[in-house]
Length: 142
Image 1 (cartoon, one colour):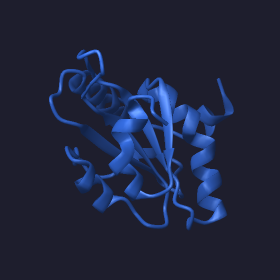
Image 2 (image 1 turned 180 degrees about the vertical axis):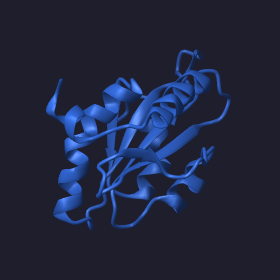
Image 3 (image 1 turned 90 degrees about the horizontal axis):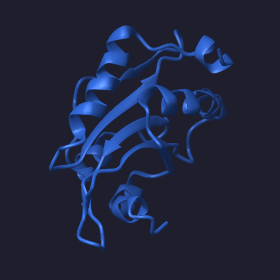
Image 4 (image 1 turned 90 degrees about the vertical axis):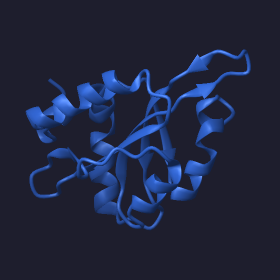
């Protein structure tokens, strides 16, 4: 058992939400995003409310200015070959203005979140404005 999995926790409800989100978004026609935070007192990772965002503008409006967040994103896009792809990624929102304590808190949980949510790729963003460019990043045009 890794040290992260002993330090940070997921409730059974959160694990169930993660599983349902992953399975339920693979055939979605629109982007789907769920935002997760870490409770500083209990070190439990949980979803921010129950809202699923379907536009990057809505998501950008909800992200805090000075606090990190994990965002699970399923984003349908058409590849240059014409094939439909639905990448399932973890966006790691780490604002440049957040304090060192929060940076360390989220950095320590990043790989655990990746493994628990079963995503293959993590994309780091430091500003909600970067969501405008997410399709390029997902298409491999970093």
